[in-house]
Image (tube, rainbow, N blue to C red; front, side, top):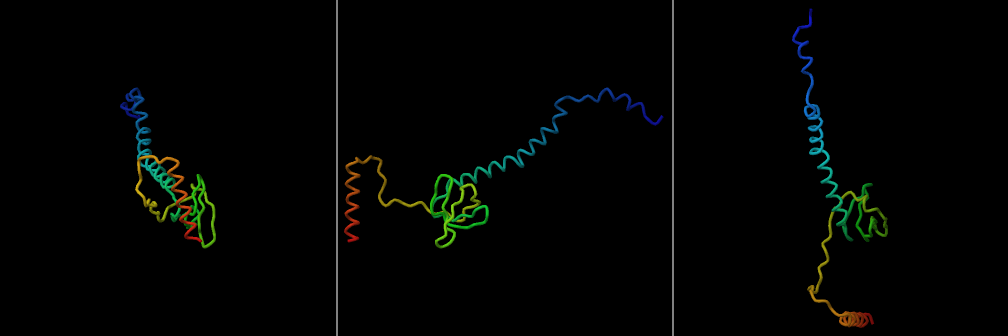
Length: 137
């Protein structure tokens, strides 16, 4: 009585295609990818580049909030000066941010493309040693 005949006739047409069933899932995945996954991967790539670029003299902040200056850089560890005569070793991955970067040291003599012979290098080293000994003594 209360059920109309129109509802009874549409029961056979309830079959939807497989594409229409998965379309909402595909759209949700696309939204998650572009709003969450992709920006996080980009941020992680930038953070890893920052960690690889840490050099001696950089001022850093660790994940625990310790602020210090990098004294020595090893493969996965950094020796950090946090106060006068206080040094701690931290893992490279725990660095949260680099506050200030040091400039690369510029070479005084121009770089040459020719290779020097070992004899020239040895003579150059001997000259430096003699120069130091004259200054010191």
